[in-house]
Length: 394
Ligand code: GDP
Ligand code: MN
Image (cartoon, rainbow, N blue to C red; front, side, top):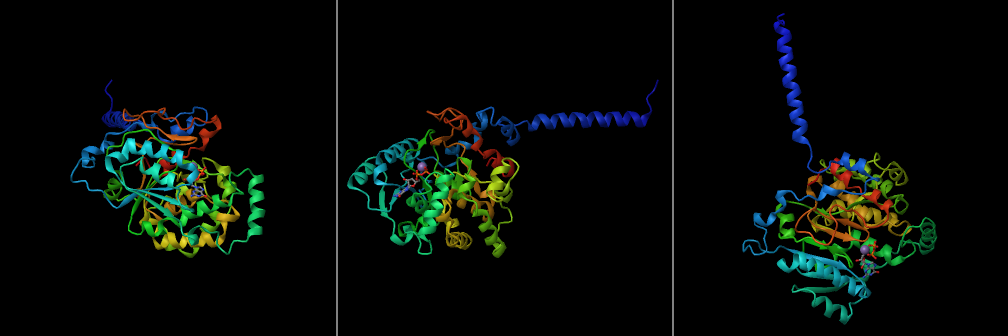
C-alpha cells in the first residue's frame, strides 16, 4: 500500500531531526565532566578525576610565551609573600617548588612583606633560594594596626563567640589584621607603587607542574584580572554580615556592578542551601586566595576602594572573621567582567588540605584530579562545579 505523500515527507523530516539530535548529543559529550556530573559525584565519589586534562591551548610556550623567546620581555610584576620570620623553612619550601617549576625560567622578583623586620637568616636563606631579585618590606604601622574605630571589648566578646562556633583563629588578633591587610592594604604598600601584577605565594604550599610560559604576560595579553586554582566554600559563621553589608553598599552604588558579572555564582543557593542561609544570601563560594595571580589595578579601582572602605568601617574584619578570600571574591564577582577571571587548571597546587592537580605529563607529585588528601567530608568543600556552571572553564 502506498504511503500518502504528506506522511512520507513527515517521516523523512522526523528521521532527519532525530539524526541531527543524536549528532548534537555526541558532539557535545564533554571530554571533561560538566558541572552537573561533578555535582552528582559529590560527596560519594571523591574525585574530580578528569577535570585536570590539559587541553591543547595550554601549551602556551608555542604562542610566544616561552622563557627563551627574546620577544617575551618580563612585565611589571612580582611574586609576593606575606610571611613571618618563624616560617622561614616553609617559605623556602614554597620557593623551591615555584622556582623549579616556573620562576627559574623567568626570574620575576620576589617581594616579602612582614609586620616586623625580617631576620638576617630569613634574608640570607630566601636570597639563596632564587636567582631573582628579592625585596624585603616592612608593613607601615598604619596599614597593619587595628583601626581606632574597633572597640576592643566588643572584639573580645566577638572572639569568644567565634571560638564557641569553632571558627579557626577567631581570637587571634593578628589573623584578623592579616585578613584585613590582604583585603585592602597590600597593594597600597609603597614598594608596589609601580607594580601591576602579583602572584601570591604562602609558606608551605606546593607546585607540581612545569609551567613553560610567562604567566604574567599571558594575563596581561589576554586582558585577565584575576587567576585562581581552587574554589571553596567558606565557614558561614565567619561572615554572617558580609553579604548584608555588601547589599547595603551595592544599594548605594549600583553603578559599580559590572554588566557581565558573576553574581549568580556569588548568590547561588542551590548547591549548598544551608551555607547560603547562614551567610544571609552569599553562597560562601570563593577563590582560595592563598593562591592568586592578579592585576592590582582592580584593587586600586574606585569601586573596590569604596567597597573596602565600607567593609572596613562596618567592623567585620574584627567583630566577625571576614577573610580576604570572600571579600576579594565578592568584589570580583560583582564589579568585574566574569570573563576576566581565569581558572589556572594547568598550575598544580596544594595548600593543606586541598589540591588542584591536573592530568598532564608535566605534573609530578600529586594525584590527578584529587581535591584533598584530608578527611572525606572535605570533598564537599569544593565549589568549582558552581564556577563552571555559571561562568565556564576558562
Ligand atoms: P591560613 O592559610 O588561613 O591557615 O593562614 P596562615 O597562617 O597561612 O596565614 C596566611 C598568610 O599570612 C601566610 O602567608 C602567613 O605567613 C601570613 N601571616 C599570618 N599572620 C601573620 C602575621 O601576624 N605576620 C606576618 N608577617 N604574616 C602573617
Ligand atoms: Mn596558609
